[in-house]
Length: 242
Image (tube, rainbow, N blue to C red):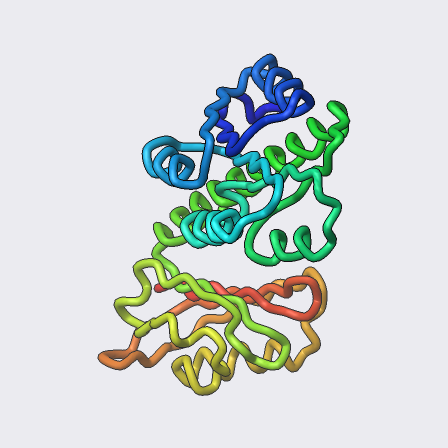
């Protein structure tokens, strides 16, 4: 897998089978940081960028549950996966751990191949989500750099999302437009044009280009609007200052 060389925090006492797992993870290039208890774990998390937690639990204590809850409040599921290792096939305990923030669990006696697969699955998910987040951030930055007003609207006319770019200077744009109907949120000329396009049935693959004056809060601007259907039940609109 590609997500190698991360710091894996191991909490609690390890049995023989556990050490086999951690040695296998070391051979894959991961750094293993072991701590005896919950307080030390919190200190390490604050100081180091850990990528996954292996939490060894024998007889569960309140502090164990509290630690999982604290870690989940501070870190998202994809940012810090938590895998609980326990020798108690206690359904209530497992459900409780998953409810308060654990990503997965492994029961002792451990199978090396199964345990490694489940741990690496969590690392793959973590890596995939982080890549997706970076791509979305790049796409958002790209859209914000375009001097156009871009928005997506449902068949019913509800604004689903928007990017104002530089065009927001002439057409007053605000995040609270999302969730509102175009007839209420946008200048009349834009709302009527988009509504007419939606009423035509949102033919898949169709592209319509309109030129018309757009009255903003301050002045009249001449704009070009490009409308294209998206999945047959939504439309994407680009309003360009012409």
